[in-house]
Length: 583
Image (cartoon, rainbow, N blue to C red):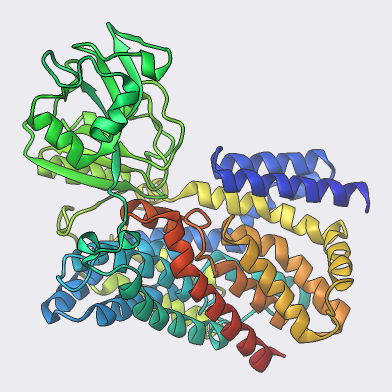
């Protein structure tokens, strides 16, 4: 193993760990890895930022902008209204909504499809026969399944097609992925429709089986302990047993109180930064046991109480609560935060927001809707609280035209969708400056920064070395064995990192395995694409799953219970189809 190969493997392993633990922003990790690769001599200077000019990156940006226009048509909302009127059984609801989400995801990125389907799922979750937990996980998984079908369904497919075009002069056609992806997606949606009502019955809260019940969502708040409160005199350690409250910090006369929890007793007028179920804080407030912190900025003429989730493209990601001018300027108060972060330090206003965090908001209804619209957060309500949106079918028609141009090979995707954006701009359907500012740029930057590192896997001989090492353990000269191996590697890695990174890393290895066995690379690349999108086992491998766990709410083990059968069925069916169609 050469120095370059060892350095590259070490660098990629370190980046995968950092991506998985989510301690640093993904674009920061990607840029740091990109510069480290150049410092280690893995690629020349002119290749450092070549990923930003890649047709893949450009196509992803174009689709992200187009999704913003399609979201304003509210076609999914109309679809949900009609489905609610039919009052279907839970199997039908999950199958129809999951199928619709998968269909949308065929033509746009996974996150965009999920964002379009989420309001419909929240509204359908109010049906007597269906619970929210039966619908949110299926639309997350269905969006990933739908991405298997087409060239633009996920960035991983675009990356793989571009790599094939560089190697052979001809990439995949628009629906080449459908020979495997469409049956796998259809089988997956049907499996979810059968499985989810049994895993998460709508009456789980009242059932005798506590395993079926999700823990109530817990919120972090900052509250004052008024004189006469039953909390006065209690030790911090006693709050958990007495009220099911976890105290993160306590302030007295403006200063933090430190020490052993069992030795710190609560005094009147102390400020608590604590975490508990929303119902707990409502009951304590009603009884006078807790009160709003006196110096907190009150909501201007509060008329509504709402919850909203921080989406991947939101401008709030990474910001502290105290700096959210988008709410403060409208008189909207942030009264609570539900987060997966384990680092709760300082005061409530010092907390940083992450993807999937849920905000509790109080203020004028229209002000809340306007603020959420501006910062790209999604309200979690049975009824859509956003302002009425445009229902024209013209944006959909333009998008379909772009898809047809690309599907029939009249122009590559980056050119055809550039034409769609131009037409939308000329018809005043989109303001490009505003739309570009609302793109999920961390994902785009991560994708562009990883491309040179993926190319280095091939140019440094690392892919050849890995293929030779794997060949010592697996009979890769047999096509089915090599395809099964590369598909397994994709399935094993993608629950921990995003699918674009998986595709970038495994594509050079797939080429080497194909060459070693004397086969054409198409079957191996389809296996990479499939494996990179079978991300059903963890809540942090894909942003859709992260949002789903927060909104559901779900336990970590719920993803194993629902995702493992889906992964096994998708793996087996996908492998059989690859061998049948591509070998």
